[in-house]
Image (cartoon, rainbow, N blue to C red; front, top):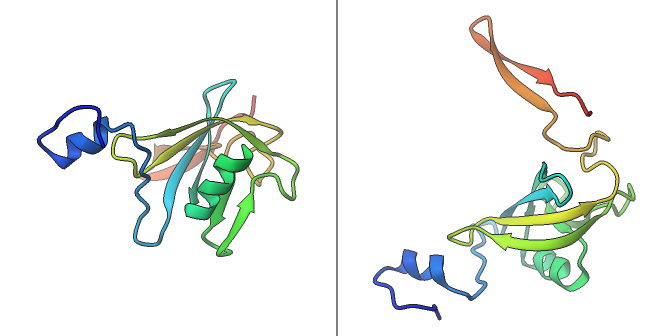
Length: 134
């Protein structure tokens, strides 16, 4: 149900107040996780319906590991947890954003963010440049 009458299904989903996440054919939805304090993008991960339910119920970030084919709670082994402050969805509800209070590094490489390399053109190709953790 939407808040206003619309003539197209795109308008309906873009204006609805009903949360109806659109999982892909594999049952997953991408999640962009950002730091509440800095606004920095920390990571991109995926959730299945169970991970989303656990995240909402617990306030901790849960994800689906595509490589391990298993649920995981962020920080379960490292102690670098993510406490969810806000959950958002994009206009067509096929991507989520978690705004979190990050405890410790977000990346398994022990960096603050998984996005620690800049792509730069060089000698007709592309190179990766490390970005300072400062």
